[in-house]
Structure formats: structure tokens, C-alpha cells
Image (cartoon, rainbow, N blue to C red):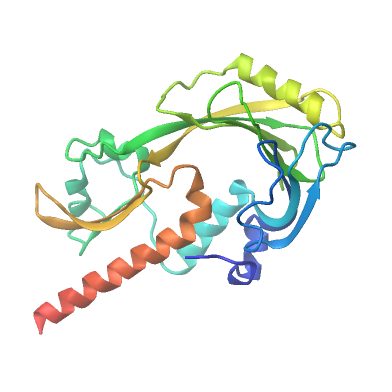
Length: 276
């Protein structure tokens, strides 16, 4: 599913989604990117020695910025308005989804457990793996956002980005550290971010004013996300899997939801037909 600006309801602007100019930077090539005809307000800049000295392959697009603090609250409120009831409950296996005290014997269970899927005893997906991320939330402000792909990063999967937060401050990162559960703060990596900022972002306002570090794990999956109708083997009951979007969870969420709805429609249509 492709999502364009016109597909986003205006109300979501109050829910943490805004339109911002985004500068994307890469040093690996001076050729224009493959997606230049699929984005809004694309402009090739080449270089900007005043703002980003020593950087080539510079271009600018109009992009989404999602402030997750506001956006997740917005989504929850929209679901509640549509009649969704939210409950918190710990399960030991997927089969327990059919015996919950507050919603017994449902027609189907939808599995969105992400990385925790492999922690359940009746589940196994060898393609699922953690992708560690580490960003820093700063008090500092910057009037634009950018993403910088380095030609020869010190560590595989490392890149450089900064983007402002709607609630104030700035986020700086980042890294795709594949296959590790290490949740410690990497001070060497943090120092590299500071060095890159001093080298490439001359407009940055002074020293890092760190609010906090955020280390988390993306649900990576070899071959992409799994969205499929399956059976819980131990009880022979249906389940729809929806997990494994990696670092693209927010970006792919609309498409993943659409595919899940299609599977639900097909499931209930088949169930109704079998009763006729």
C-alpha cells in the first residue's frame, strides 16, 4: 500500500503527524536517488558547504515527521471512539488468546507480539531477530531534519540523523545494530555523533544538552514482515500474524493494517459461506 499526503486525514496533524522539509544526505554517490519521482517537492542540491561542509549528493524533499508521543495517544483515542476495549493481560502462549477472562472464545486471534513472539513456547520463527537502535534526546533545537548515509561508517549499520520533536528538543542518532540484545549505552558511539555534529552541522547550537538515551530493539525479520493467516497448532484455532516490520513500523503500519483487514474479511466470508 502506498501512502501519500492526501491519504492522511487532517485530524492527524493534531495527532503527531506533520509535514516538514527534510534534507537527505549521502556521500556514496553524486547520482540522484531512485525515489526522486515518488516524493513531494524533490529538489537536487548537490552540496551546501555553508550548512553541510564536505557533503555531496544532497537533496531535499517534503516529508512526514511523526511525533510518537502524540501519535500513539491519537491512535488509542481513535480506537476507543470506534468502540475498541483495551485490556492489559500477560499470556504464556498464543493459545491463551482464546481463553481470556474478559473476552472468552473469540472468532480469531491477531498476533502482534513483535520480537516477543519467539519468547512464547508454542511459537518459533527463525527469521525474526533484534535490530538494536540507540538515539539521544537533546534539549537543543534545529529548524530542519536530515538523514546522512556515510560512505564508510565506523560500524556497520551506522548513519547520522537529526530531527526536531514537536514537544521540543531534538533526536540524534543512529544505528541498525543487527542481532544483538545489548541495551547498554555505547559512549564511543555517542562521541562519534558529537564529532559528526561538529564536522557536518555548522548551524547546531552549541554542546549536546542530553535529556536521555533511548536504546530499543526493532523486530527485524529476514525477508520482511509476516502478515498471514495461520493455525495455532496446539488447539487448531486460527491466528493472523502481523509482525516483523523492523525499523519501518510506523511507516508500514497503514499497509500492515490494510493487509490484516483483508485477511479478516476473507476469514469471515469463508466462515459465513461454510454455514450456508
